[in-house]
Length: 222
Image (cartoon, rainbow, N blue to C red; front, side):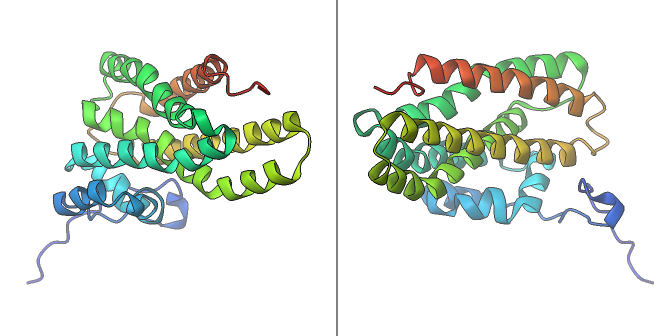
């Protein structure tokens, strides 16, 4: 007699097409290596996103994942910061990580209140997906920003273009995080209104990111 096949854990947002998220979560060794090899962040959060979603849903070794995303965000955002304002290169990593640090507690507390049953590392993982993906996009954009800065004579125009690329990076991170929470939210364990909560929290996150950008003087031409 054939052994019963265990059902897949969660389904993707494209469930109508029959796509099923890979039920293989990242092992502790894989995530530990990601901490010591931050160049693998692209594979971790984008290329293997189905495994990432499963790891978050199962709360599997998430503190290592949190550490990998924190370190990766700090490192990948630096080149864009250097091109934007060499002496204040830290401002771009500070914008991405600072926005999450300000907003993540509200997501965790309100989520517990409405019954989403997200653990602290799950909340941090979903939140840090935004800044880790955004930092990867800024890394991809920094050669473009360097070229524009070198060839566009108007400094104000160059900074406006930098603001546009940074905004696109943050929005890409938001889109990826929304996609991940939608997949995680399909688990039976999360009975609370995870998707509406996360949508409202995303609006708050974007507002705080904008305000923090002003505080860090990222939008000025000086």
